Image (cartoon, rainbow, N blue to C red; front, side):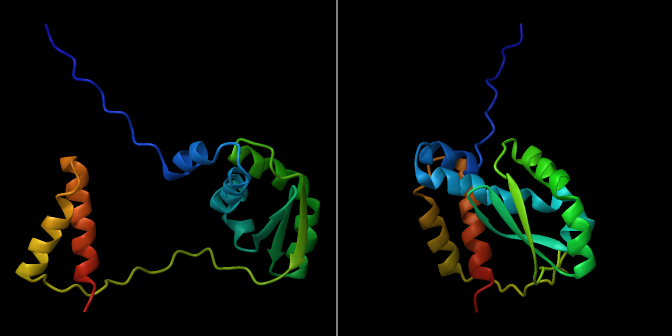
Length: 157
């Protein structure tokens, strides 16, 4: 007979943890509103996202910067669809109205990744990193913590 190992639960996301900590406070709403920027590009598609980006949210109204007159006009006709798409991505009806205005739009094109020069750590640095990580009880988490500190140090001059 096989014994079943207990399944490890997937760690909660930082957003979920913050949401549970801030539940019932004004900051909870700010956290929800911040998700608009996270879901925007995927919810509306890359074509629209390359011409219109959220810049502010207040009392149910999302303000978008739109990069040209023709796009401003086109998006005026698509307001209701955009509201539905973003609210669906949020799993909540936060956005009630869109306010469109001409403005600068950040590029949504992926930035090229350039290799950052890394240096070899000294033996003293490696010992110091191990000492810092000893405070973490979980071996997997300790290893992640060590890698994080090491990478940070490797990029310092």
